[in-house]
Length: 293
Ligand code: EPU
Image (cartoon, rainbow, N blue to C red; front, side, top):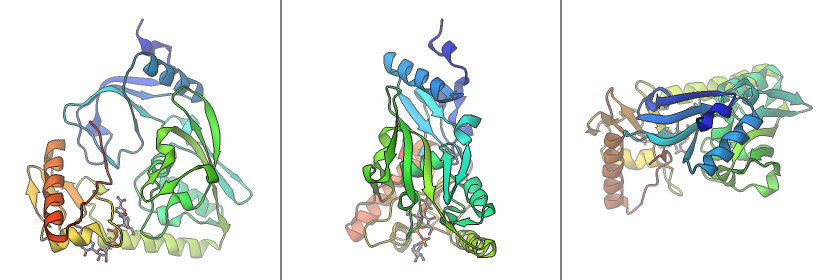
């Protein structure tokens, strides 16, 4: 009997990861698993540990560079309805980690609540956003979190209060768990004001960011007190191309897949940019994307 036959959720074998990353890059995952609920997830985690199968978590795949030769392990996605639950109570929203940020923003607005408009246009899930403390230059999701329910790799579930979670710039201490759900504090607001904010975020993104080709959004974190996009721009690297990977002409911190880019093209371009920025500014850029190996 195969180890995955005990699972109730979906298990795909040799699943192309390019279908699941916004970069549209990546070889095959040996196992692509979508557990049905928390009990199923627990079985998966225990089995993977027992069989020493490496495990990678994916949300919307918007911040991941998957290797060309694929993943010899499990890629886990919490996309079953169980992980997409949304509940409102008083001025709080409780959301499953598989909820898309775009949906969360609209559901919150429809309840006449405000606070997460800044997540507009970020292609991701609640779980992914919490793991990397997603946000804009002035606000991150961690600022609003009340508590987060997680599962550890042995299958134990616990609720972590915000005081016990470290949120940093594009990182959080939650990354060592599987995030199940989060409770976020919101404030009552007039719907038209909320809509206005959402519209502004959409137009700023349209104006500044490049959605003409597949990408993973910003490639590098902003160094302290500086903008990675501006530094790369000053180095004259807009339009720089290696293989199928190209620095966006619109926003220099975006690398585009012009059609047939491989992960190795992206990595070579990342290395090239890092070297140029280091030479010119003596600043070492750090990737924001997760580079799977
Ligand atoms: N800039 C340039 N040239 C460029 C790009 C930007 O000079 O090619 C300048 C801009 O004119 C601006 C400054 O750099 O003065 C900052 O640019 P921007 O406002 O576009 O913001 P960012 O710091 O590049 C951050 C997040 C984005 C998020 C926006 C929204 C990081 C690394 N990036 O971008 O997040 O959408 O703020 O405000 O924190 C992502 O995480 O994938 C992402 C795209």
